[in-house]
Amino acid sequence: MYVSYEPNVSSNESEEMPYEDNESRKPEIEYRNVDMFTSKKFFAFNQSCYALMVSDISRRETVTIEQLKVASNGVFKYLKQWRYIKSQLLLGENDALVLKSNTHLRVPCIEQWIEIVANVHVNERSMHRVLQDTLAILKMSWSMDLRSFGLSIAYVKLTLMHVDARR
Image (cartoon, rainbow, N blue to C red; front, side, top):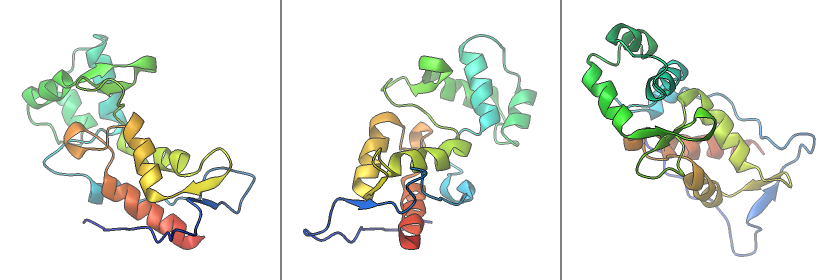
């Protein structure tokens, strides 16, 4: 499912919109089923697979196909698939997975998506950022390409559209 979203910002409107709840800088973002935003063709890490990959890259553990099948709910049928993904990644600071092609881009697990979006969408002054600003900031630190195990842009757009509509 792809949702097109263009923010409605005229030249007179501020780039950022105030967030009404001053006690918290995070907007109330409901959990969205990420399965509709992931691809059968490209892999997105869940927490179990993420931890397994960190262990595998750091050589703490040799991964077996049985472990992969359990961690990935049967997505992996062959170790060759896992090894290919492993060849695209490195360990960054604090055992975070990063892309070998761009070590500034972290790879999220799907359970982190909602928290990542919430943390970036609201700035330190408790102001909501517009979609383009939120995406630009996300793209500086996170993989935003499903082909590179990243956060789905369609997920970000739909989530923010829902948050901004509730304000």
